Image (cartoon, rainbow, N blue to C red; front, top):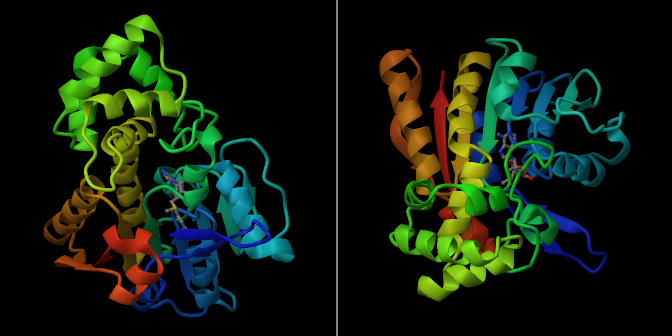
Length: 312
Ligand SMILES: C[S@@+](CC[C@H](N)C(=O)[O-])C[C@H]1O[C@@H](n2cnc3c(N)ncnc32)[C@H](O)[C@@H]1O
């Protein structure tokens, strides 16, 4: 997904691999569809249009601020209701429900074996990266937070200031696939003895002193990825979300997942492959689609995307 700001400072955004997703899900009017990651609603709108008239859509989004943006910018007055500050709030009428909850909880709201298609678009939405207050960015200074749902869970600052040395190194190795995990951990531990970390730039600068820059990639990229994954428990959420999607899909229903890095892609691939063996679910083994060169040229953030499909 990419956002560009126009002169009115509104985000226009390009949902990634939209054509391929619509072709693979092959939705019909009257179908029921789930968008597991609404973000700013780019794909949501296309999925909603594909099932009209009389179709149904459930959208899940862990980040209440994104859900508000999705509603305001993409649906305007078409759907009523307000989003409150409680997890699980929903907006919309009977046919279109946008729910402020993790996709791992989809089985609690959506009936088993009722859905024709489910889409997951994993990763961070650009407004999350661009808003320094959310603490995802090593380019803009902000509080070291990184929670998708800012109302619960631990912050990145708590992890870097409080976790044991070995646990920190393990997180950087496992979730950042950072070869210099120990070196980064040691630099952090040395610094936190003097002064605790509170801001994103502060952490990024300490990492940059001990990890060399790789081309245009910022030295703190993998450390920030690791912290984001652990703060949001992303990989466990993904495994639970995929199981939940399998539950709500009808036999013959389709699951489409867009991944952006190898850790999440491996989980999706292994899940889909294991279903083929265990559950009588047909996935095209090892098969995935990539964005076209034209899409990558128009939207460079799409270049690492892989789209995997499974048919229940
Ligand atoms: C790449 S964006 C989705 C973009 C969206 N497809 C669009 O076109 O606007 C991914 C979104 O997933 C959300 N997210 C991450 N983990 C989630 C979870 N466990 N449950 C629900 N949403 C989640 C993030 O907050 C983010 O807004």
